[in-house]
Length: 265
Image 1 (tube, rainbow, N blue to C red):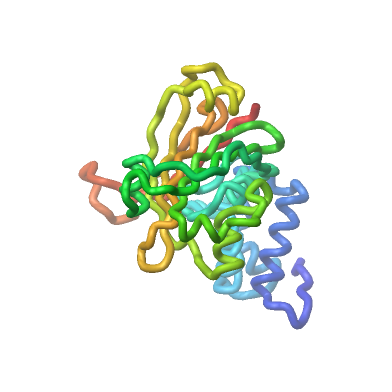
Image 2 (image 1 turned 135 degrees about the horizontal axis):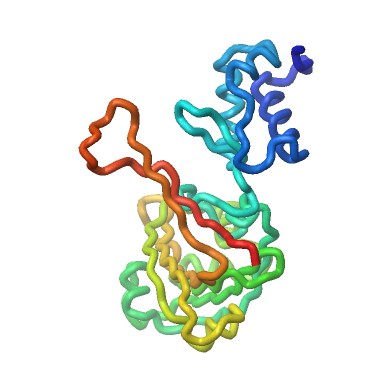
């Protein structure tokens, strides 16, 4: 039985909307397989190109993931979001199905530490803005951000409520300064007193630390950030996959996915 389509609306949009509705309605739970491309072609009486475009839309939105030779599967959106997409915390949590909120713990100028100065391209000791924010998912502390901004970009944030607005949105929406690239470094550390108290963990508790230098046009640094994640609530998973026909000598395999997984509390 063919699914009725509405005239005047692109076919691929109608198919992606239907699939999204079926997923959100619970017909296709997380990690279950969607109907095949052939089945969708028959259901909607459309070409395979149209179906693939609809699936690509859902994949780009993080609703589904695809496995070569196997088909399309539903993402567990409450648990995972991809680091490979350059997003901010609010976007990440939204993709994971969690409500993101923030509390500003510190917002003040301070002399720039040497490592931060190197990342921002300023002189060590120069005054920069330090912004500390507690990041929460569904009201529970998940991470603490320490962000440093050079004076030019820091002044653009004056008057903005950074507990409600993100740096990404303010700079791009108000000033046309997009964040186009970022360099990440993932390490671990023991929670110091200030961080432990904010996150509600014991002093010395192991934390996952992600350092990021975010850049705009011309590779110009905008900010350097150090994010402390609760390791009991978050980890990273990666998947590698060798393409069909590639060498089987055990050499390097390309990265297919690199996802942050938020564990239930």
